[in-house]
Length: 51
Image (cartoon, rainbow, N blue to C red):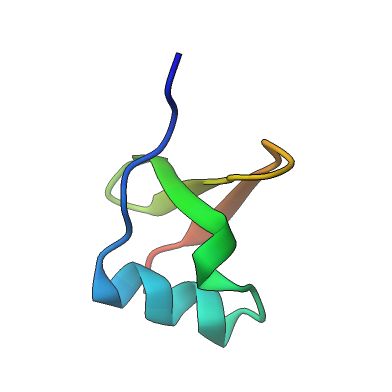
C-alpha cells in the first residue's frame, strides 16, 4: 500500500522551519489543525500543527 502525497510548497516550508529535510517526507493526512507526515525511508510519522 502506497502512503503519502507530494508536499505543497507551504508544507515543505513548514517542515524546513521545524528542522526537517522536506525531501524525506510525504503528507500522510491532514485536518484543519494538524498535518501528519510520513518519512519515505523509515515510515516514521510526524505530526505538526498547521500555521
